Image (tube, rainbow, N blue to C red):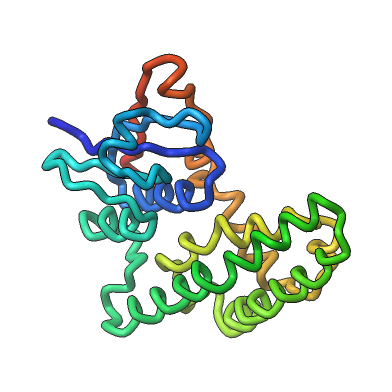
Length: 219
């Protein structure tokens, strides 16, 4: 049986998102690990924009957006009910929150990370700008255990890599901040066995010409 082919970058939040979706859906793919400075010609051939993740299906259909890869996987199989099939309005709420993350929070987060590295005073400005979004997440997690309700959803895993990045910029400040529900939520997800599997390091395809079977049959 021919498996889908996934091009992935270990620490890219979008690639992490895709790998989580594949694992939680109990799908299997063939993974080729890459780095941005040495992209395989085949990757650029099937997805000229050259970003990861990229999933090539056996029918040659290409999915090169992380959220679309998550949705593809979960529509094949959703054993943890991350799409909340019992609630016809749930997916729309998830997608709205993910869109907020991707279009508004992520650009500000990139500025926060950049100015933290340069030790520029603008770090405080962008930290506060990020907090406007973290406050929204904190409010949701105060009202219920996860971002959409009391059960995990697509939104929790789609936002996890980005909130993880936020927490790591100024860890000392973050650990003493007022966002206790965000911390509890993040700690739970980061310490789950699934996340350890997601962050497994693989040899680079361009260095060793080796690809790896990725995916598990029960999380």
